Image (tube, rainbow, N blue to C red; front, side, top):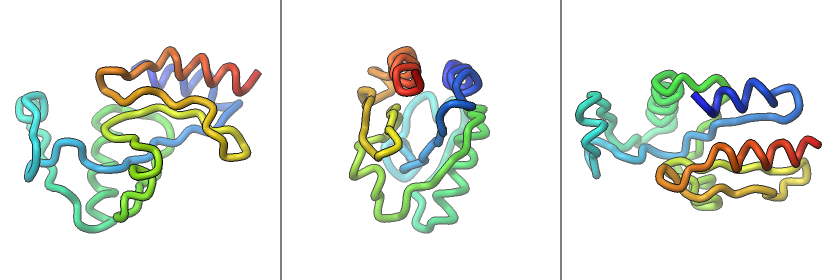
Length: 122
């Protein structure tokens, strides 16, 4: 997976985190054909433990190698960054966003993210 390649190439120079914000296609909400075909069925979590369980399943299912954090049940990260269902950011050591990728999955741009990482670590 391209994200793992970028992580492996840059992990010694910058911290990486996957922040699981919410289930984009819960079984008790809007479901996608792809989730139906691959039998991915998660209800909207109502507790931090449920959200963490789904996040872990996502990380394992997508084989993502970098550390994962979980958004709180108030959706603080999602509300601040509009990150769902997938979005890539680079944040400098002072907390300033230096790269905010467009909302995925259709505008998802790992190459643009990698370029921003290289600029950040140059």
